[in-house]
Image (cartoon, rainbow, N blue to C red; front, side):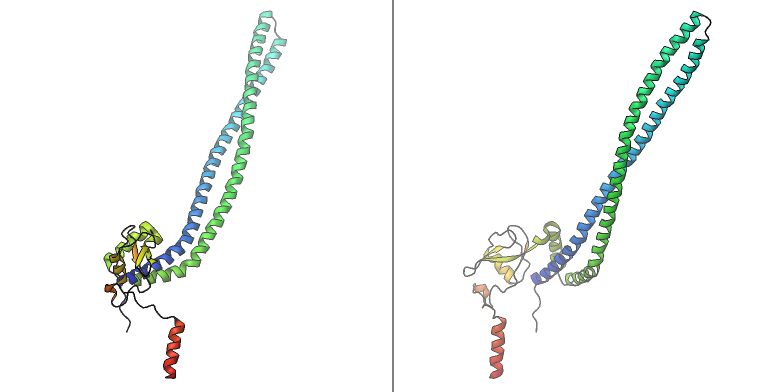
Length: 275
């Protein structure tokens, strides 16, 4: 008849299924993080493109306004020149000439502003074109990242469901308070939530924590050997050992006999059959 499983063994089974779940989820989580980062970059580029497009529209309107102003002034200058040619008095001619000279300054200023606006428009057009290309490139990356994320989800979906069901079943066998301790340690320390005993000196029964590598008192090692939920005195992780630490008289500090190998067991069975 199989002996009842001790508390530490039950916790270890839950912990190892949790490790597998985290491993599978990490693949999907990494793909998800990459996708979200690409979406963020794509959104930033779209925002920049929207701003650049608005600026380009404004610059074009400004350039058109200065061009229109220069054309209106030129039209007025044409009228004034005709009036100058038909002036009857010197006074009239001088008045027309003064206005022409003033309007020439206005026209020069309008043309200069138009040229500056056109130069800015050219730069804005180049920026908008570059951003448009960048948005398209980033959109393609987002599409590939989403496809990769979806593929990874599909790859692990069945196994995740199986492991989640297994974890639920195993967790039901663990005492509620012990399970809460394990889950809290997993949240805070991940794969370091549980650690094996590491042998420092087998003859002297000296062991250390497999996580923080600090030496462990004899009473802690004894507690682990009895299958009780035991925490490292240094890092607080849950300790376990998958090998028998002590024999039936382990309380007296005597080590358990070394388990026979498969070959030894098989030979013993053959000898028994021959007998």
